[in-house]
Length: 110
Image (cartoon, rainbow, N blue to C red; front, side):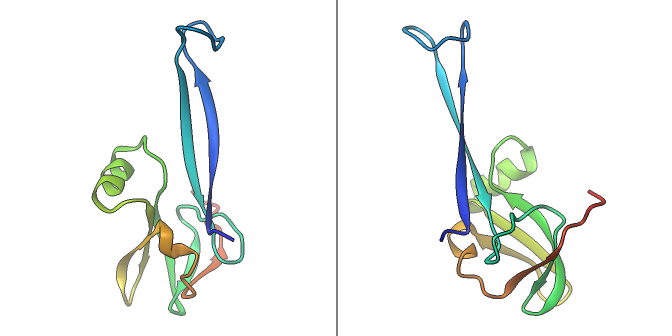
């Protein structure tokens, strides 16, 4: 099972009906998941190499300047922060196999 999957939404332009001369836009959203199946979200409390930390950034979808820059520079993935290793970027294709990343809880304050 992949640690990410995609959601596809279709938006139609010019009149609301798809037909000749209309433009259909497809938007693909990657959703990253922990090995236990929960969706990875910004602010999540985690353990990384058994050290407490949190998810600082989820670089999965364009639309926010900070995330856009991160995706252009490094690709899609997640940034975690914890006191021993500091900031660590985990690319999207490595999240599934990252045994050292464990979900603890949501940060409901965000």
